Length: 114
Image (cartoon, rainbow, N blue to C red; front, side, top):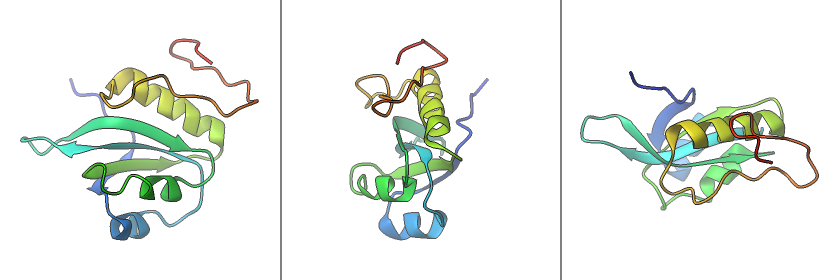
């Protein structure tokens, strides 16, 4: 059984595509990757923004081929989604567990890490 990411997409990772698909300034989580030979999205990296996921995605243009994303109501929800993606998708380009925003008491529900 395939586990879905719960993110919107995938879309080409270009400034034009980001501007077309992301209409709001909001916290969010995202995955970067490529399409496999079978046409399915393969997630290679997960990340988040506590304030503007659109702006964060633009910093990765040229570093991956495609992206998925989702908005969240607050930074903690984006952090929790990033943790979920990190643990379940096991993206190869993430070298360490997602970091919480400094001073926030958030904990990963999957491993209890900060």
